[in-house]
Length: 256
Ligand code: NAP
Image (cartoon, helix red, strand yellow):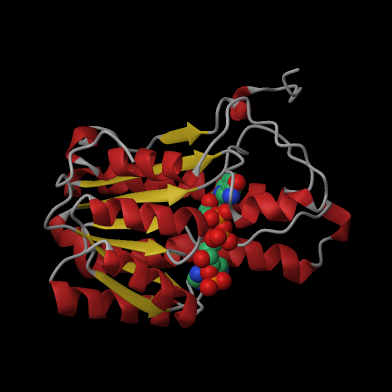
């Protein structure tokens, strides 16, 4: 639920990577409920089909296409199919990511590389393909889902922090290089979000949820909706932390 008008994205087409679960699923539903046609991708077709069924009950038009963001050819294929079917691709949400908590010396070389490949390279692959196939000629809006790790050291998260900080940098550079083409590129950095895979994984290492306020998947989706809407038409190259102030809480002392 939010206060935005129902039809603010009508006529637009939005691709959400990792759109079958968690925050991505809520972003997809929210953009769909505000008029966009939705394309969701991830590696598991059955999960995507489940989400598509749910969206269709809410009269959202949805394509569900399995593809791995690490594979540029698969990504290009998805984008080509979307443009063939619906003739456009106005919005891209780079949400797909991996995560597991681990201290630096305990992560395998492959584990660290996998996170960089999914989060950073995956964002680059999808962004480049959308730019080349559609946005370069028509403009568009891209939102990268990151994490509020850019300015702090965060234990158990060296791999994710490195990858997401790379995504923040890519966000700013894309925004600058493509501004004159009418392409806006921003990021949303969630804090700990209740009811997500991320939250579950961190219970295992008893990392305290240090959010100063409680965040929901809908809070993430609302921030993304604002950024892709025409109300944000002069906003590009920024990161909105949607994290209840955890990203500026240097000492991370939970409120008592
Ligand atoms: P999630 O449910 O695990 O979402 C990640 C999605 O990415 C899944 O749908 C997964 O589907 C997909 N994915 C993973 N690897 C992929 C690949 N190689 N190619 C394509 N899709 C892939 O987790 P979430 O908690 O909702 O997180 C969503 C985003 O928010 C992520 O970017 C995460 O870093 C960020 N975030 C979350 C929190 C939090 O508290 N939850 C905090 C900070 C940041 P498949 O397994 O089917 O591929």
